[in-house]
Image (tube, rainbow, N blue to C red; front, side, top):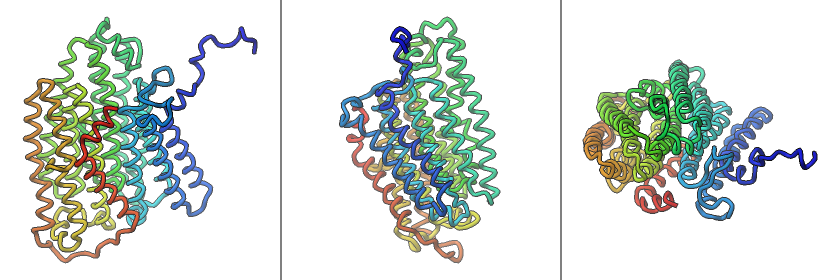
Length: 495
C-alpha cells in the first residue's frame, strides 16, 4: 500500500497498550477456549479441564497483579486502552483477583459435589471461565456498551450453570426463572444506556463526566441512569429486584450458588461504581436525588433481607436473603458516592467472597442427594458430629454478622464511615440496626450447631476430598487475612 494510502488515524489499529490493558481478560478467555477444546477432543477430560481452568485463573491473577507491582513498566499504575473503552490497574485489578479467586474455589469444590448430585459435566469449567471473562469486562469497562457486553457474557453463563443438574426439577426451574427475569433486567439496562447516549451523545464514562452537567436533555439522562440502576440492581439482588434470588439460589447447584452470589455480585457492583462515579464526577444537577433513591434501596434491602431471613428453614434460602441484605450494605457505599464508599465496597466484596463462598462450601459438603440435609434443623448437633466443619462455619457466621475482628466488621465499618462522611448518618444508623437483626439467624445457626441436640437419627456423612479441603482452607485464610490486615488491603487498593 502506498504511504499516501495509509490510514491517517493509527488509533484504529490495536496497539501494545491495548493488548496489555486487556491482558487478564485475554488470558482467562484463551483458557476458556482451551477448556472447551479439551472437553470436545479428550475422553474423560474432567481432570484436564479443571486443571486448565485453574491455570487460567491463576494466570488472570498474575496479569492483574502486574499493574500493582510495576513489574512491567508499560503496565504500571492505571491506564486506558481501546480508545478509552477499557481500563486496567487500580480497582479493576483488585476485582480481577476477586473473580479469579472465587472461580478457583468453585472449581476445587465442584468435582466431588457435582458428581454426588448428578451434575458432573465438563462444560462447567468452560462456563465458569467464560463467566469470569464477562465479569472482568464489567470491571474493566470505561464505556457503557462494554459494561453491557460484560453483563450479558456473565449472565448467559450463569443461566446455564443454574440448570447444570439436568435431572433436577429445582435446578431447571432456577435456570428458567433466572433467564426470564435476567433477560427482562437486561432490557432495562440497555434502554437506560440508550437514554444516557441520547442525553450526552456518547457512552464512555469520560464523556459522561464532561457532558452530563451541560446536557440539553437532563430528563433523558436521569431516566437513563435510573434504568441502569434497575438493571444492575437486579444483578446484585437488591430490593425490590431480589425476588429471583431465593428460588435461584435454592434450586441451583450449591457450588454454583456460592460462585454466583459472590463473584457475580462483585462484578455487578464494579459496574455500579463505574457508572455512579462518572455521574458524580460530572457535577450534574439533581445527582443528590439519585443518591437518595439508592439510599432508600439500601435501607429496604438491608431490612427486608435480614427480617425475611429470620423466617427461613432452608439454609440456602437463608443465605440468599442474607445476600439481599449484604447488597443493601454495599449500596450504602454507592449512595455515599465518595472514594471512601467505593473503596469500602471493594474491600467488603473481597471479604464477602471468602466468607460467603466458604459458607456455601460447607453447605455443599453436607448436602446429600435430592437436596437432603439443607434444613437448618439438620445442622443441630453438628458441633459434636463434625466439630471441624462446625467451627469453620461459626467463623463464617461471625464474619457475616460483622463481629470484630473478622473481615465483615471492617467492611461494614468502612461503608458506615462513608455514609457519615457524605452526610448520611441516618443511613449508617439503619445499617447498624440491620446488622443487629442479622445476628438472630447467623448466631442462631451457631447455637443450633453447638447447643442443640440432633432432631432425629443422624444420616450418613459425606466424605470430604482433598480438593474440597483445599478450597475450604482458602476461604478461611481469605476471611482471616482480609479481616486481620484491612490496612494492607486498602493500601493496595489506593495504589
